Amino acid sequence: MTADDEWDEGSPERLYVLTGGRSGSEEAGLDLVTLIVARTAPQIGMQPEHESILRVCQSPLSVVEISAHLNLPVSIVTVLLADLLAEDRVEARTPTPSLPDIDLIKAVIHGLQNL
Image (cartoon, rainbow, N blue to C red; front, top):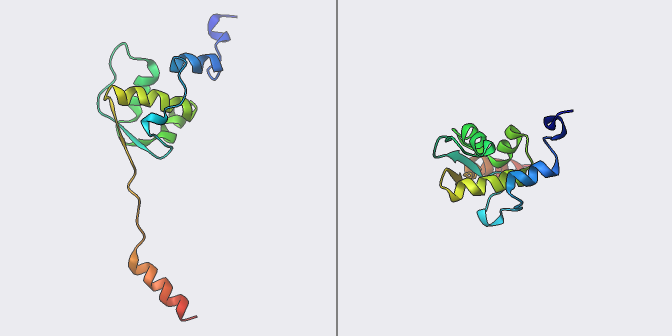
């Protein structure tokens, strides 16, 4: 058995190493639907997970989508994203809420009143 065989990709030890022992990134204000877009390209010497985030975020992706692409828990991804935000390598955008069509709502109300 080699050392690589012993290193489970989803092990708590690996996740601890990825974040440097940090947990939570509430101060970054990220939630599952926050859109992330890369501002810079990956650079030599970066942590591989940071590089992966920058590669997949060439177009905006939500935090949960990034988590799925990297096959990492959302809590770990938010810590990694907080690092990239602090270095100004990514931009976080709140998704624009889609407002309902007022004419459609009026039509539905009118239809209900006619019942």
